[in-house]
Length: 261
Image (spheres, rainbow, N blue to C red):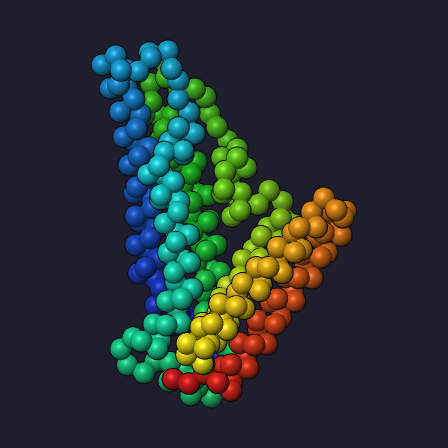
């Protein structure tokens, strides 16, 4: 079975989870964008808030529920990194057995699952980038002019919050951040395959492998301020490519030689 066919299967299996995730996040954020301004107006009319106060979309963006709606996709995708593998072993039927018996490279299975994670991540990021200006426009429309503190550019929200991780300011930063993310997924995939290959011993090996990868990144990051930025960039690039290459090699070996259904 070809890689594209396997990718289509993986995307088809995640479609309902993806749609549910998007619907929950979008509805939550739009509801908050509508309800908070009305709540503030009520507070001012009742004398519980100062009438001269003004609001911007930052007040919505920094609300706890809004932050939870942003964290939900991160948590869901993080969990799905494990679900995408363990579902095939512990779900109904013998899906993993059929995958491993396909007359094609087992790395196609690995690649299809990896690309699925990447595509879903990019899709969620893109959808939020599209709906954010709509939310900001709705906020301006709902809030009375006397309380409106001015328009905020979306990039300001990205660059002053943790969202800068998924919305890098430059193309170079984009490749660096998402390259690190893909490498992290490869490392976790390798850890999962260690556990599937050797049981509890494999769980220990996989955990040690993840810790070692993070420690290696920590050593490289500790060079910040001690070397030129270009040198640090090259070191981080080398570490990333090295870890990714090792993860792919280990995963290929485990899939071919050790993993069973």
